[in-house]
Image (cartoon, rainbow, N blue to C red; front, side, top):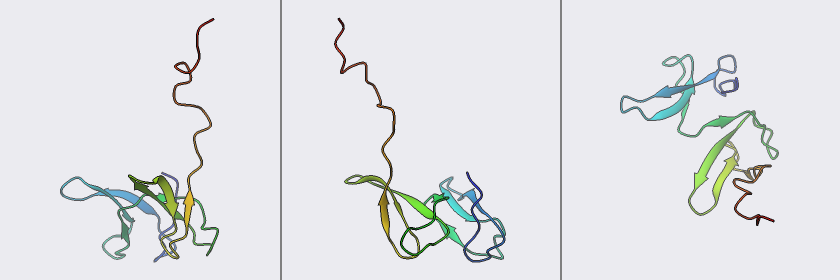
Length: 94
């Protein structure tokens, strides 16, 4: 995970953590002094709308994967993969 600074302390970084039930979440490295936490994975990409330092990955059954700003809720569709998943099935042998 890229180094993303905590929005509350602005000096420390966000790290991946686990609950007692082993569910992943993301929080400040200075916990419990800083109580920032998020279920969504932060991505090192500033928000194009409000210029927030990072966006978070969201997944929806209907829309698939997309990015959302945690501050202004602006949404950006993630770029599709450059390589097709399996192009051999669509090609017919000569």
